[in-house]
Image 1 (spheres, rainbow, N blue to C red):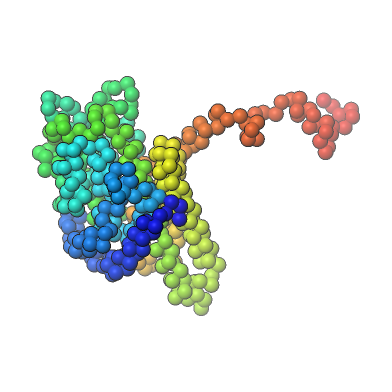
Image 2: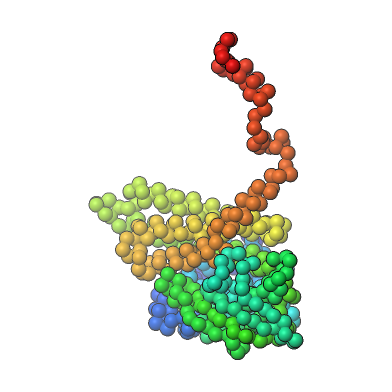
Amino acid sequence: MIGMTDRSRNLRESLIAFMAKHVYPNERRYYLEAERLGPWSVYPVVEELKPLAREAGLWNLFLPAGEVPDGLTNAEYAPLCEIMGRSLFAPEIFNCSAPDTGNMETILRYGTEEQKERFLKPLLAGEMRSAFAMTEPLEASSDATNIRSTIIRDGDEYLLNGRKWYTTGATDPRCGVFIFMGKSDPDGEDRHRQQSMILVPRDTPGVRVVRALPVFGFYGVPDRAAEVVFDNVRVPATNMLLGEGRGFEIAQGRLGPGRIHHCMRLIGLTERILERMCRRAEIRTPFGKALSEQTVTLERIAQSRILIDQARLLTMNAAHMMDTVGNKVARREIAMIKVVAPSMAQQVIDWAIQMFGGGGTSNDHMLTAAYAMTRVLRLADGPDEVHRNQIAKLEIRGWRNTDPALTGGSADILPIEEADRMAREGLWPKPEGFPA
C-alpha cells in the first residue's frame, strides 16, 4: 500500500488481531447498550476495552508526524483507519474517533501551552471527550461564511452567542470542551477572516445541550449528534485559538487529515460488508439457484470490488500528497475522496441490503447503521455539491496557463480557412459547380 512502512504494517497486524479478539465479539453488546442507555450515557463495553487497547500499544495512533516524536504520516495512519473503520464503535476504543481526533489535532497544532495542559492532556488520556460546534440550523452551513454565531471581545473575555446543531459528541457525559466557531469580525472586508474558533468548557454558564438528534433513527450510534445553544456564554480571552480571524485557517488545517480518516474508515466498513455479501451469496438459494450463481449478484459483487479499490487508491494518493506537498496543494485530491468514498460506500451497502432482503433493513447484519453513517458523511465536512464545485473550479483554473498546442486540448472554433481546406481535401469534396 502507498506509503506503508514496517511500523504501520506491524500496527495494522496488531489492530487486526485486537479487532478479532475484542471488538467483533462485543458488537451486539455495544448496540444493545446504546439502544438501552441512549445517547446521554457512557457505554460500559467501550470503557472496558479502552485499557486493553492502551496495553496493546494501540492508543492515540492518529497523532501526526511532525507534531509529536512518534507520530505517523497520513499515509502510515490511513491503513490503520481502514481496520478501525470495520466497526462503527472501534475508533473510540483506540481514542481515535471523531470529533476528538480533529479537536485534539487542532489544540496540538494551534493551542497555547495553557490550552494544551487544560484540554489536550485529558483528551489524550481518554479521560474527557469533546465536541465541535460549527453547523447551524438557521443558515446554510455548507458555506461557513454564513455563520451567524458571534464571538465578541469584552475586556478580558469573549461573549459567545449562537445556536448550533449536529454538534457531534455533545450528549456524551464526558464531554468537557467545545470548539466553537463564530464571527469575531462580522463586518470585515475579507469574508474568510471574519470567523474565529474558541475553546468553551462544557460547564460554562449559558451552554445548553437542547436535545439529542437522531441520524436516521439512531441515537448515539453511529453518532452522538446534538443541538446546542450558547446564550451569553463568557469565556476568558486566553481561550481563543491562534487568534481572531483565523477560524478558516484552522478549519482547513483540521479538515484535510479528518477527511482521510473518514474515507479510510468507510473503506474498511465497506470491505467488511462486501465480505458479508459474498458469504450471503453462497448460502441463499432462491428459486433453486444460489445467489452466487446469478448474474446480477456477480455484477454487484464485482462492481463493489472495483469501487472499493478505486476509492482506496484515490484516498492513499491524497494521503501521500498531503505528506509530500502539503494540504493546500492536495486540496483537489482531498475534495475528490470526500465525494468518492461516501458515495461508493452508500452504493455497496444498498446492494448488500438488497441481497439480505428484509433482514437487511434491520440491524442484525449492521447494514442499517452502516448506511446511516455513510449517508450522513455525504453531508458532514461539506456536502458533495460543495466539493464537486471546488474540484471543477480547480480543474478549470489548472488549464488556464497551459498552452493547448502542447496538450492537444484546444477548444477554439475551427478557422474558416481550415474549414475550407478540409472541404477541399476531405473524402467527399464539394463537386464542381455546386451552389455556394
